[in-house]
Image (cartoon, rainbow, N blue to C red):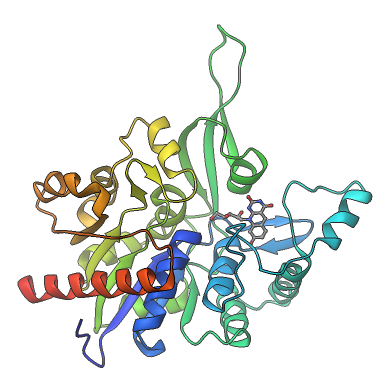
Length: 333
Ligand code: FO1
């Protein structure tokens, strides 16, 4: 893996799966060569606080503060705040731990003072000792909406309900049947200044789409005005790592969503979803039988171990993915 000193890499990431690869990438690339752009479509307001789940997942994972058992929030968490919320009959479907709470309170305060989400994220990352750039996809509010089939009595025509992402994900535990997605605010949102700056860097060598949910973690980033087109026309090689392994999602509802959308839960379907954006696809060794199907569409494939169960595999996947991207650059420019 030979990245030239000025060359840079951009990772596009969502929640836990993305943060695992992001951590691997931070171990092999210095801060001046790697930036991580994070989905903010999951953001919402709860108990008067601005919550940025995917950004916080990265803040915690990259600073060693993440709660690996829960898969979200902070390690060594306590729940006194939520206990009192419950005592006072407040809304308790979304859990905010005592340690976690500080981030939401400070972010909300600073947003109200007019500071951008980018600047706030940057200062939190620095305070946690993270040297790499964590960049929210946008400083404007974009809210992912999950369109689901409403429960109706038999014989009645099914209605479509628009569920804000966290209502679907946490409150309703991804149970409703998904029929589609929309991103409120996307038309008037702009990609954050740092994201645009890194995306247009003439030395950008690779754009890595982390193994995150394509529909609700990566698509909001790609749907920002101009982003998809810039990725397509960028000379940087664009690679995606499949979040689907052996027909299931490593974490989260991606496979369930695919089934409900009548799409096979396969790496080939993930590659087809990203379509002409991609210059290469990384799939797990369990899915090696899929490699030929994807290659037959003209897309190069790397087959490797993508199950990031420890730091060594995170780092190894990051190294191999980058080497794969650079090998593609060598072959066609
Ligand atoms: N996920 C849950 O399943 N239940 C929760 O109560 C919950 C609280 C929570 C609080 C702060 C935060 O940053 C994340 C939190 N998450 C919770 C995780 C989060 O909603 C999802 O993992 C992501 O939005 C999906 O990427």
